[in-house]
Amino acid sequence: MGYSGGFEGIDYDLGIKTLERWLIKSDKKINIALGIPKERAIDERRVALCPAGVKILSENGVRILVEKNAGSASNFSDDEYAEAGAYITESPELLYENANVIVKVSPPLPQEAALFKHNQMLISAVHLGSVKKSFVRTFLEKNITALGFEFIETRDGELPIVRTLSEIAGSLAIQTAAKYLETGYGGRGILLGGIAGVPPAHITIIGAGTVGLFAAQDALGLGAQVTVIDREINRLRRFEAFFNRHIVTAIANEHYIAEVARISDVMIGALSPKQKLIKPIVSEEVITSMRFGSVVIDVSIDQGACFATSRHTTHSNPIFVKHGVTHYCVPNIPSAVARTASFALTNTLLPFLMKLTRHETITEILWNSHSLRKGTYTFKGYVTQKSVAEITGLSSREIDMLLATG
Image (cartoon, rainbow, N blue to C red; front, side, top):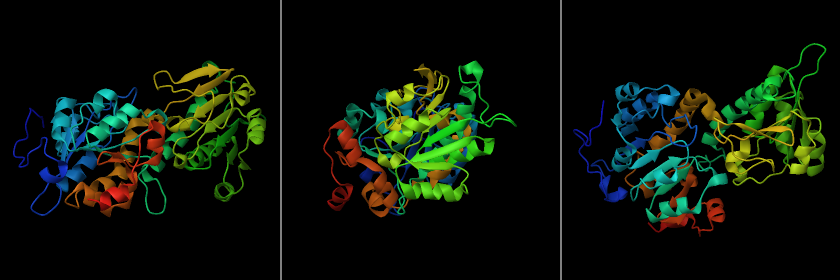
């Protein structure tokens, strides 16, 4: 199914009218035209929705626009999307022109932000570690309602989208560690699990959250020695109970981090995203004390950095060596398994996207959904997340106040 500049049989007008006026149906629910653009961030191979998710939304009255080849890096063809009910657009310009809700994986690049029309909605990752004031200001000027994966939160405090991606990142961190410990990659030449008579690698995980859980699980499964450190004793207690005391746990402090770094073959930075902007807790001095050929994997890099020596890398150029230690600091780690990650993201996003179809206006949608309300970071020309305001130096307003004033 192709797209040649206009929708055949679509009975609503897309243009410069405000979202809350041009999307009213007779049954008092919004007509959603949801756009899925091709990701343009470096080495971002995922797609926000797989064809199965498109089919479910289409069957529930949502118009879906998918940019040509948006799913190709995840091995989803345009034909699969068309068969699921999507309209295939030939360019990003056509997609942004004719969609009122944009759903993507990575934060928009500057050239993508320029394509947004006034009063649209965006749902994507934010990556607080690299968010720019100019990016947020563009959204404020265009009155974009923007929701971030990192902020969407359930009533029990769970971050469902972050958790899903963290599960993948935790498992991949161990696969990555095993590879870069190999001699051919400049590592110490250690088999992660060892063999009879030869001790396994020692892995230290900083952060007892979802990434840490899945990393520890996979590391133990391969036979590695695992130490998990965290600032919260209750999180460590849960880890000890879950792993039946097969791991070592300790409270995170400068002294213990320095001690354990000297004996670690791998250190994984897996700090909780609930801290929003993450600051390094492992100093450069500690990194210099690690053994030659050791590996550092900073899963926290998209929200800041866990290690003082970290800097952004990419899947095309994933590592650098500093002080004899291999650093892997790729912010979009799950993109390495793009198809699995796209399925997982679709499964988690779908319930939230379905909420968009249940009310008449954006204000009503946010008012009636705790998760979407918590996930919003720009609304009605204001920043509504304090962490975003602090990073950009922009003023913020409480979203509940903005909703209450209509």
